[in-house]
Length: 181
Image (cartoon, rainbow, N blue to C red; front, side, top):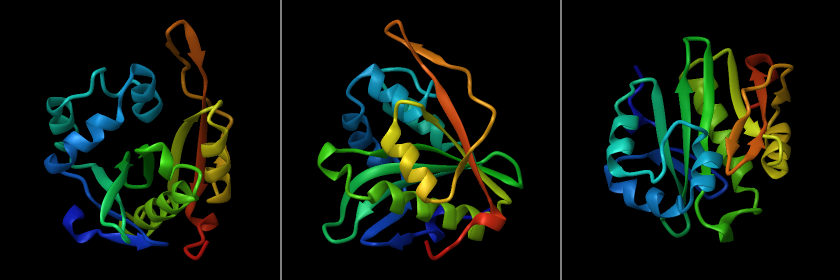
């Protein structure tokens, strides 16, 4: 299996580096509500997220978990994961740009491109999938720009504080992946 330590990916002053216990506190501080946890991770974690949950999360050898680094400042600005669902399929999940000041600057597209590079070139996936909430139009535009297409299947909706959040499933096939986009 691929060692995370071998996988530092960089593009446009953004790098993905292995996420570890030393990064737990930063991620925990970014998740300040049940809603933000659900948007970030779906029902995967329970609120409040804590170091025990994150330790267990890292124990899965099919999870490739990264911190997102601004290479100009060395600052951790986000989180991302590629999950090897099968030898052919990788699922991108738990993508987060931690602080609002870093959002809306194209960083999400760079993160997605780096995750696609890792998924297709390192893990040799044939397809990369993800789920996104239908109201998250900025993320949807980002994923479309990266080459994803909406699938006809939809994940089960989630309810938070009496409001139903509907998801959209998206995918990109190896044949449609362009490393230089």
